[in-house]
Each structure stands twice: as C-alpha cells, then as structure tokens.
Length: 421
Ligand SMILES: Nc1nc2c(ncn2[C@@H]2O[C@H](COP(=O)(O)OP(=O)(O)OP(=O)(O)O)[C@@H](O)[C@H]2O)c(=O)[nH]1
Ligand SMILES: [Mg+2]
View 1 (cartoon, rainbow, N blue to C red):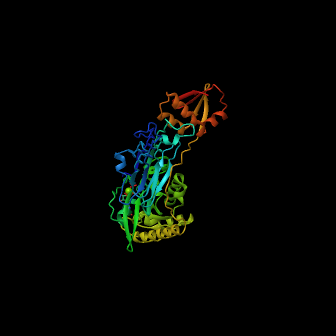
View 2 (view 1 turned 180 degrees about the horizontal axis):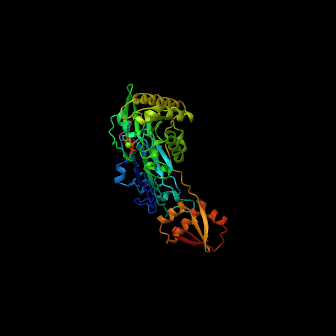
View 3 (view 1 turned 90 degrees about the vertical axis):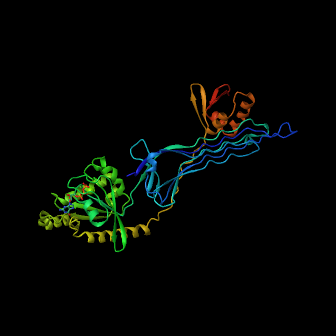
C-alpha cells in the first residue's frame, strides 16, 4: 500500500528586477525603464477523485514550481512562474515533519477539489524605475527576486472506511470481512496473518458500507509494537468500529478493555468512537458452553455485545444491519453539527522586517529587502553605493541602526556590503 510518502517541494524563485534606461535616438539620457521580475510559482497540493494512491510520490520525490521571469527594459515586467499543482487522493493529509515527536498538520484534503498552498513562490524583484527620487533620477539599483520557499512534507492517505474492524490478532477479523464482503483476505490460525489494512464493500439493503480490517493491534501498539502503530492512524477516519473479540479467549471482557485502553493511549479520540462490541467464534463448543457466563461478564461492565460466528455466518447479517444503522446515525449527527468547511491553507506570510545585531564591533543588518538590492547590484561603484544609502532610510534600516546605538564611524554590514556609518 502506498499510503505515505515524503516529498520535498520548492516554490519558484522570483524574477530579478533590472536596471535599464530608455534608449531613444537623439535622447542621450533617457529615464530608467527597468521592469520588475515576476513572482515565482507556488506549489499547491489538491485532492482529486481520479487519483487513488500516493504511489507516484514514492517514485519522484522532488517537485518544484517555475521561477518568475526577470524584468526587461521598456518597463516590461517578467511573467509570473507557473504554479505547480500536485494531485493527491481525496483523504490525504499533508504534514510538516517536526523535530519534536509528532508531525504538524498543514492541510487535510478531505473533499475533492480542496487545495492547499504548501510553499509560496518568491516575490519578483523591483526594477530600477522604483528607485528614482528627487535627488536621484538615474537609479542604478534594482532588486533581486526572492528565493522560493522550500520544505519537506509528508503526504499521508487516511483510509476512508465507514467501519473499522479492530481486535487482537487471530480473533477472526479477516474471516468476518470475507463472510460479509467480496474481499478475499488471507485467513490463518496464527496471528499477524493480515499485514496491512484491507477494505471490503458490504451491501446492506441496497446501500453500501466500506469495511476495513485494521490488523496487528496488540498491547503496546501505541508504542510501535506489533504492526499496530502504522495502522492505528487509519482508524481515525472511520465512523464506527466493530470491536471483534474471540469468544474462546480466557477473558473476553478483559480483551475488550485492554484493546480499548490501547486505543486511548494512542489517541483519546479513537477510544471515543462508537463501537459495536462483537463476540466471535460462537460455533465452538467451548464458547457455546460459556455463552451465558460471557454475556453476564459483559453486562457487568455495561456492555451488550452481539454474538456471531464469522466462520458459519451466524449473526453476520444482523451485525451488518446494525453497523449500517449506526453509521447512518453518525453521518446524520456530523451533517447537522460541524459543517466541513472548504479549507484552503496558506503558509504564514513572511515578515519583511529589519533587525540589527552586533558581531564584534560591526553592526550587522538583517533586512531581506535590502539584501536583495545589494545582491543584485555592483556595489563597487561609488555612485551605486550612494544610491543604496538612499534606500536605507526608505526601508527603515537607518532607524533600526540608530536604535541599536550606531555612532559615526562604526562599521556596518548588510549582505556583501560593508560601509562606515
Ligand atoms: N471456529 C471458528 N474459527 C474462526 C472463526 N472466525 C475465525 N476463525 C479462525 O480463527 C483464525 C484466525 O482468523 P482470521 O480471520 O485470520 O483472524 P484475524 O483476526 O484476521 O487474524 P490476523 O489477521 O492474523 O490478526 C483462523 O484459523 C480462522 O479460521 C469462527 O467464527 N469460528
Ligand atoms: Mg486478518
């Protein structure tokens, strides 16, 4: 199953602004006419019904959107870089990998067409027309395009089944799935026969129900034991659970309590999910013999399980009818309550602030807007240096330096530009 992929996405770089002057016949010194660079393209992830797995993302792992074009003379602005739209199955969640423990959710694409901007393209740089002033009619400075954002994200497909079949290994989950649907899971008398979730479609009164066997749940699954940890997350999307219990177990009630405790340890929301408690294997003579006792034990803890034999089919159709009823109830409640909003996520806007800190006796200015001008410009020319100084006031760099206590003659640095105050 290709239900998880880690990819790196990079948005397009903004195009550079240019330094250019009008050149007309018989006009020796035309004004500045350098156009702005276009913005870089975003990387967008969109849910699409036509896509059924994340397989493609396990083969190709790096994706980038187009860069913005640089500006040109005659005030021609560069074209915006095209957005890159990656289509994923409905039910995909996008996560940031965080250093500390659990991953952070960026987007939850649970409806077709829903999309999320994952990384945003860099802004295009300003052409030299933006840098004219009363004292400077021939600006020789322009701004470099901003780099596009880059990030690694995890795509995770959460199964969308109506009903999750949970329970300890070997209790008969696969047998129940096979008895109620066309699915043909492997059935065997040892634990962990089923190694990944299996779906089955069940018809009840001309309506259909999607069942999923959630394999490998054991004590300590929330810590990664068994196969459980990988699959517990699939349970999150189901509407209800069929909690299957082996009637021939030493203590069926205790089994139920322990599996529920395990769910709660993983995620308390899972333990809150509506459950149909079902005791299986009632065809076995030893189970038959203890039926009354088992019933009493469950009612002592306030549970009223259904009894079935997945092997003979006894009680299975009643169980499915019950499951259908429960699923419809959950759907109605959900529909009436929270309206699933069409979420479109945007990364946090970047702050183009200015900050100053001291390294030895040098004042270091961190000002992305200014750095992008400096990077674009030949700072060896005195005229250009003079023009850049004009930008210090405009961008609030002068103010920040004064606040930091800069005095006449102090060394100041920004990007690759150094000067004395
Ligand atoms: N007698 C009897 N045996 C059953 C019944 N249901 C399942 N079994 C047997 O129990 C064993 C396990 O069945 P599975 O359906 O593979 O159980 P599972 O819960 O899917 O097991 P894993 O996938 O390994 O976790 C098999 O030998 C089945 O034949 C039942 O109703 N009666
Ligand atoms: Mg199985």
